[in-house]
Image (cartoon, rainbow, N blue to C red; front, side, top):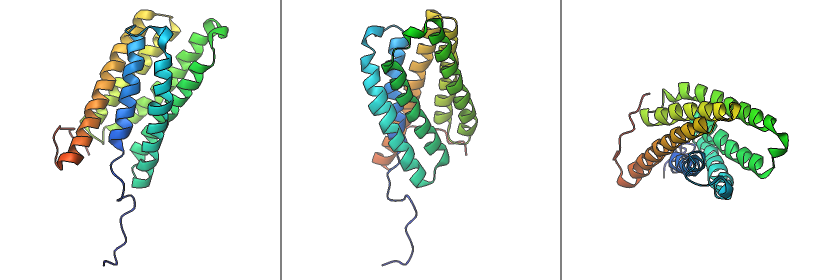
Length: 195
């Protein structure tokens, strides 16, 4: 028996693959809507994912990151979990009655998330190349989608959708790297640590 106290959070598995996978899945499906691959009339698919995977799973991952003492992971996962829950709430409430103001409101909503993501991108420079790639692509995605709403431009929204798709792929890669590192006991996919 050891008198050494266990390290706080040591009993937790790495929550990052869960958070990244939940983010990737939800972002992928919404990007398919933005690219017009899935008709906008079927956005209920996105809303379920936004609430359960994008929202709840990421908030849980964020809380476990808090327990492990990872400020970056806790802030990112909890914030983006809240983003998806707020997205679900906005989509559940008809903003169409706002007319053109709905596009302005959504544009500013996306700009605000773009600003948050941009400053998290700076912090991601100390995490890994894989995480940095996710944040750079996501920042571009938010600003393109905001421009699409401000200009009511389907082309800008589609372009934002393509960047969102690239973001989802990068997040899935990073999640898969974390899962395989745990299950294989060694690095299988490189994530290019920067710290």
